[in-house]
Length: 249
Length: 249
DNA sequence: CCTCTTTTATGTAAATTGTACACATTGATT
DNA sequence: AATCAATGTGTACAATTTACATAAAAGAGG
Image (cartoon, protein in one colour):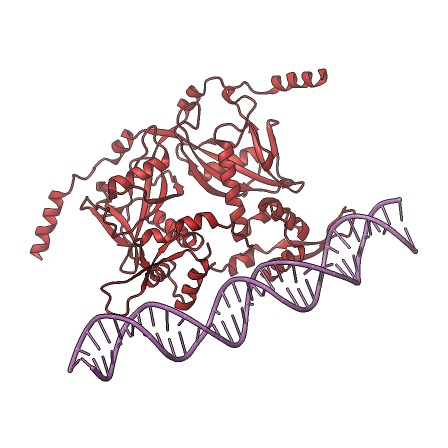
């Protein structure tokens, strides 16, 4: 294998010098602040809502902003987003997924800031939910205006993401109480997807998936025949998760 | 409306002071370098390939790395990714979509670097494609080893993303020459999805979508009956794009 | 307590879509 | 001319989706 050895030596010589000190390399790079922004969706009065706060920048006075924060020096992106959720809602273990990075060089009036947008879903009536800051408000997603930064765009992208996602994965249940009626579930889908669905076919669909557990209870305080309550069987779903397949576009 | 005025004044007083100078605010934020990494997929010899380069860090000597670069001070993220593609492949207008941000605090040995991963698809035999650097090589996606950084993870995520995406959108065509046979198309789907498909049903599926244009030509230099060549009708697809709907999980 | 109203709950027929499967045709090779 | 290796096509059956109407339960009001 003498020939191979010779080739290796040649290749080494042609190669540009390897960088020995990665730290000084990274120090040369231009650096920008990174934030996370959480698009926190809730569902109330048959409408999809998003939790917003008044912008604290004079530049955006009176405008609304997503809940976000700077990512700390040694903090993972997901951890930062979870921290924002915990600090703002008092809740842990909230559904959270990264959606997209936004990095337009002029999106922040104070200089370049790259943000990673997260979508999170929670039950707006959860007992643990504490909206501490009185600058925080739930807004109907379809009647937003006066958004700070590029936050309207971020919400739109998360909304689009959500529409697609709830059709493929059982996320929507995170927006409902643990026990819910099929009517509530359908209202939720109709509100997010902005369509109307046939009730019988909707029920048939969910029952045929066989992930709903009849908890043997009924709605209360409704001025008409109460509906049965169900729980979603997340355990069974995780076990039986099937690889979706089908070319369709 | 004197009462309202009074309320407004009160609200003002309760509110924390607005930030007047966003620039000095942003300057206080911890800043980290941002890079883009392109997972450049190609298709050759019935295998999905990814374009990699030898790492130029001694720390990762002999290991392979995605093609990436630092995002410049006033550069948009997408622009940075397109620049990487242009610089590395000599090609413009390559299919490119952002997939995910990776920001683990220890993913780079030189200090924290957040990267935005992009997936790009190109025809490995495109006449315009110039692999200038001899440290660049196409690797079979399913036989990777010795990856630098968290690039194996990034590739895995992009590969998963691609599998899902080609079933819902006509991306795969970006990996083929403009004119292709149905067999090539099927091989491509089979390679990416790692399944075998029934030829007749595959053809039926694509013909029923009615986006394939018969260009009236045939394969050449094949040692058997040549297949017809088709083009994908991107224009018609864009016009007729239907909103996909169906709850299924 | 009867009636009215509202909402839940349920089934079936028709249309569409997906799946499994076999044989004749073409062109190149010997 | 025979062989080989691939292309190209159709049909029956199963599964899924869609459209659609009526009975039963509970509360409200007289």
